[in-house]
Length: 195
Image 1: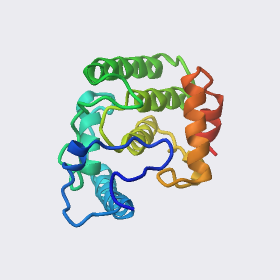
Image 2 (image 1 turned 45 degrees about the horizontal axis):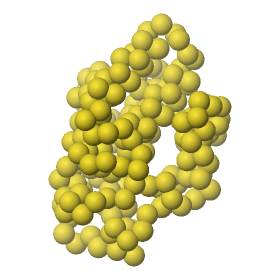
Image 3 (image 1 turned 90 degrees about the horizontal axis):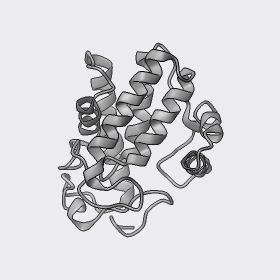
Image 4 (image 1 turned 135 degrees about the vertical axis):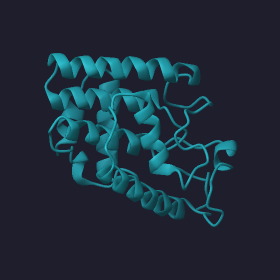
């Protein structure tokens, strides 16, 4: 199956201009793209392990992490999307909504508004809902949430211990939990992230 032909349920299709931003010219299928992106993410994990990180709760870090995760895959890695999506806020609202989320999360953590797992699950949910980038939002939101947990001295989430990129039962449960959180019920997401 070629790029742009089909997508896993719950994924956001790329528009032709975004597909034109693909850097490796040899990639022709979704499977090849998934493998290439995973290798790119592996290099980002190495960077995270060796780098002295700035404050996670900044727009700069949000963008830099995405750039590091996808910089050898997409020309637009680390740049906010400029097109409308079937999920997410309008492109012109990405910056303001992200700043609100970062400020809210900092407040929750400083004042103990929620238990750590709930605060970081709320952070994750809202980051996915904003949908900052053209691609990789779920993977980026999961990784930055785990970085935030580590910075707070906690273990990363297990994220259902399944493949959340391919169409799997774990992905179905994850998407259902996000939809429930969209409706104000965070219970399924809190259960999923530590399952």
